[in-house]
Amino acid sequence: MEPFDVIHRANAEYLERLYQQYLTNPRTLDAQWLAFFKGFEFGYGGHAPAVVPAAGEGVAAPDPLTKDVYALVNAYRELGHGIARLDPLGHNRPSHPLLALEEFGVSLADLDHQVGKGGFLGPTDGTLRDLLEKLRLTYCQTLGVEYVEIDDKTQRIWLQQQMEPILNQPSLPPSRCRQILSRLATAEVFEHFLHTRYIGY
Image 1 (tube, one colour):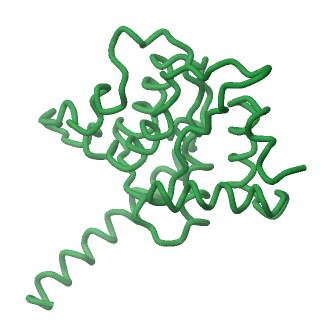
Image 2: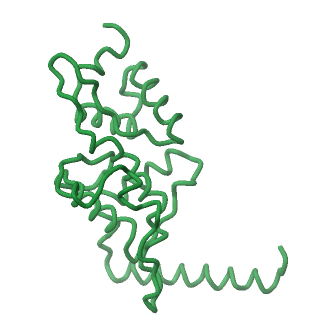
Image 3: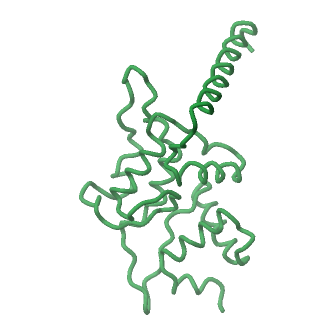
């Protein structure tokens, strides 16, 4: 088999499955696929874009709406916390210009088109409308997460695998919630102490 000639016969779902396999267990992939996805990530700042097959014999032309779905998902991973509902007084930022649909070549008219999951690990029905809803539930609610700048790729992937399948809404018993609140309060008090005791450091 000529290197990568399978790309021209594959469909987008197959390539997406391979990419998810690359994210979770890259050692199970052939060396050529590893090089392929590493090249995509290098060219897109650490995240692969939508992988779409080339049109040809036996392969339909890819839907142009799927072109930037990976970029959309990664934008919410990176910027979603900026519009999370964190202000108890309700003065939250309603939108972010870099999350506007127009930035990704789609519009409100495309909301009911099938675009796939774009690498999102949570459940969706495949439409742009549902994907956006699930991304907002995961990254823009009362729990904001900023993790894309973590240098360790393994840690970033682990966080995605913990958050996205449950839409970042863990079901915790009250005792665990109280324990988390106590640790957060302790960290806040300690940080305040450092800022007052060691001014300028």
